[in-house]
Length: 306
Ligand code: GDP
Image 1 (cartoon, rainbow, N blue to C red):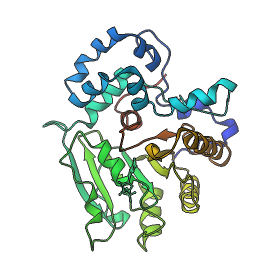
Image 2 (cartoon, protein in one colour):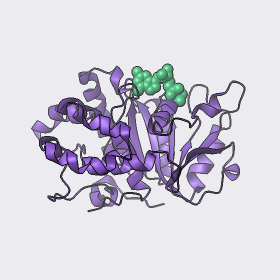
Image 3 (cartoon, protein in one colour):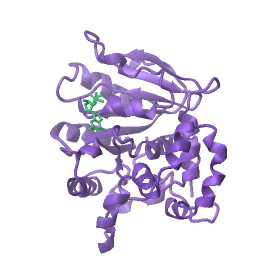
C-alpha cells in the first residue's frame, strides 16, 4: 500500500480524496447553511433517506453541530491562524453527504448484511469490493459506531462477536455492491490472545483494504495500546484515519485539548494517518453523517476529488 512519505513532504492532495473545489455548484457547508433555497435541491436525495430529510429540518446551529462536530472547537483554534490544524481537508457539501446516505440505506437493491466472521485472515471471506476496517481498544465505542453507521439498515446485527462464550472474531458486513465493513476485535483489556496474529496478518495482507479507522476515546486520548496500534499501521504503511469517539462525554474545553494533542501527535509522529481528525458521538449522532460520507468516498462511491 502507498506510503505517503514523511509529513513534511506530504502533498496534501494525495490524502484529500474528499477535498472540494470551491465552485458555485458545489457549495461548502457554510454557504449551504446560509441558503435555505438550496435545501430544495436536496429533495431528490431525501427520498433515499427519510432520516436525513429530518436532519435537514433541524435548526441551523444544531444541524452544523451534528454534521461537523469539530467546527465548534475550530472557532477557538483557527483565529490564531494555526496552520498545523487540518480541520477541513475533507469538507463535503450537504449534497455529497446526502448522496453518501443513500449508499448506507438498505433497500431491495442495496442489501446491507452481515456476511461472516473469521478468526484468521485466511478464513476471511473472499470479497472483491473495497474494504474498510475499524479497530480500537475494547470499550472505545466500536460496536456502537458501526451500529450507528448502519442505522439505515436496522436489521443488521453488529454485536455478533459479543455473544457470551464466543471467540472474538473479525466480522464482515457487506454494504450492497459498494464495499465491505470489517469490525475487528478490540485490543487492550479483554483482547483475544491471538489478537496480534489475527489482526496483524489481516492488516498486512488484505489487498482490498482501502482504509483503517482507528478509534480513540476522546475522553482519555491516545493510550499505550493505541500507540501500538498506530505503530502497526505505520509499519505496514496503511492509510488510516483517527476517529475520536464519545465526544458527548467531553466538555468543549476538554475536547479542544484532546484535539490539539492528538492533532500534534498525528502531525509529528505519523506518516500514513489522514491529517484530519474525525469526531463522533453515537449518543447525539454527531459526526456520523460526515464519517459515512468519508467512507463512501474512500471506497470509490462518491468521487469527491478536486
Ligand atoms: P466496543 O467494545 O469498542 O465495541 O464498545 P461499545 O460500542 O460496546 O461501547 C462501550 C461503552 O461505551 C458502552 O457502554 C456504550 O454504550 C458506550 N458508548 C459507546 N459510544 C458512545 C458515545 O458516543 N457516547 C457515550 N456517552 N457512550 C458511548
